[in-house]
Image 1 (cartoon, rainbow, N blue to C red):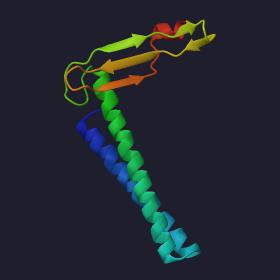
Image 2: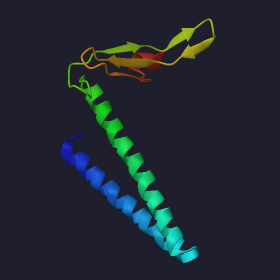
Image 3: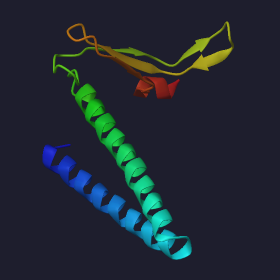
Length: 121
């Protein structure tokens, strides 16, 4: 994902948030009161903006990890993958996992990613 595409996505998301907030304000002001409509619209703007921001930050982090770079410092970041495996003590299949640990800045992250070999088993 390029910076331009990310900026366009963020702009479209902001327009959508404002459209929903306006709709909530209009219905809230009509059905309850202008004050209630304004508070509902503010709640929509804050919660939707927080959700969109967290989605963009997560996408940015996963893009950096997929390129093998640390999202914090940009250093080369090796990954450690554990395949899907049978755990006989608990009699369950453990999910696959991939972990990234940066020695430079201390960044650590893990995801439950399945490789093609994990899907065959």
